[in-house]
Length: 117
Length: 458
Ligand code: SF4
Ligand code: SF4
Image 1 (cartoon, protein in one colour):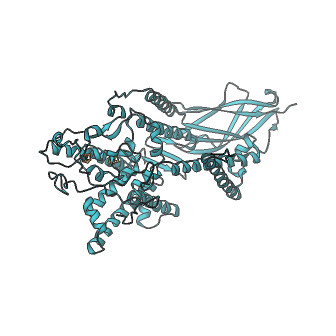
Image 2 (cartoon, chains in turn orange, cyan; image 1 turned 180 degrees about the vertical axis):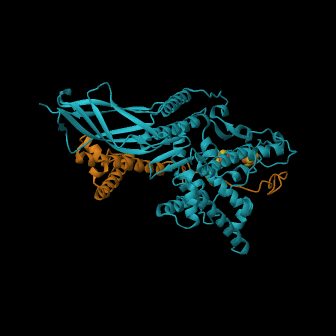
Image 3 (tube, rainbow over the protein chains, first blue to last red; image 1 turned 90 degrees about the horizontal axis):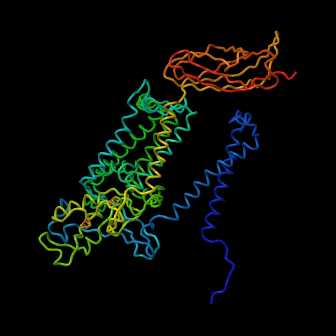
């Protein structure tokens, strides 16, 4: 008999946690390098001035933007490797054998070989 | 062919190499036509001039996109974004109606692979010859053929990469600098990169791009329903399959119409057997339709054992082309297209930005006048030179001085200093003013920008 156990996360939840986390790391590294090289005030001084968003918020917005992009890439990657045709015709559920081919004329003598047309 | 196809112990085995057999017929001709038109446009367009500039040019340093008679500036980014949305929506629409038409006839992956296959076929022969050649030991013939193929492939790929860069840098100049080996660093990089991508995708990866890498291929099933046009094998008619002579009566032998020639498998560029039912790998290229129709002709059977059909039709139900989702896509598309066309047409060909001088709020002049200074940035997006006049809308209190003179050549960007003076009695504190710019030439182009004019509070 099966005993009730407290389960940890499902596969899907784990996948999403990985997606969120890796995208976060990538965006953090991206922001780090980006702002090491350029000062946001030079980049869009006019903006920061005009809307008075302040440098901190500018940092935040750029990070959010990068995070969103990375998240998209990360999530799409998960989706692509998780779905789709079974690679190399995996055996078992959903798998298909490699299609068999033969010379068209073998069992059909009226089609003549390579130049059957 | 990969020799090491394992006996089934491991979970994965390598995909066998696909050697698509040459195919002729209605749909093959349609694809050839699509290849010629699309690649023709790609390779020829950059060489055609229009209005004194390259017909299609993405001039990154000047941040201008030329598409025939239209010039897009960074400020027009919204149009490019909208056009991308329209392209995406059209893809949805076409997919819902006709399935993966895009994949079979128009996708760059298909189109370039087709050309690489033509070259391969030209040098190495059709499917049986290629399989034999690959299996044979290396000898002079094999080396010669393989080298010739690689040279042709690489030349074609390089030409493709060159053309690609030619959309971003005037192609004649690029041609000249390639001839004299003086291409700049980024040009060289992109030329080689795009060539490499073409060679890799169309020469090496081929169907694997469609099977494993393409997001559209993965998402399209969500746009499908039972009335979407798909390519399918009529199982009820074809089975049981089996070989026979032309003179045999299939009914007598207990056979269906499929003669088991496996030609439909041999022509398939993704290496699948359509007789096993709808498969996500199928790019709807219709090669199997063409070849099976020829077999049917040969056997004097009715065509269409494999055909464009819908799931509903296959199961005997009635198929409906006009369905709610088609209408939704269509209406959305029409609205967007009209909107973009209208707004591109009604674009004001003058762009103006007014920025307050950051250093001083205002200056008091003798005669009880107050002066504010602005930087005025103008972009003349027209193909003609213009002179402009400037004034404050509906208010004669303000007097404007601009230097230098408000003149711009066609497509010129200019920066001007604008000094605005008003009597101190015009108000207290910050006033909103609307500044109007108009061309002196007909037809009049007009643009109004708002800004703030600062006056003392006393
Ligand atoms: S080409 Fe037609 S007849 Fe030949 S195996 Fe395929 S379905 Fe059967
Ligand atoms: S199954 Fe037929 S239509 Fe689909 S990819 Fe193969 S040849 Fe093309």
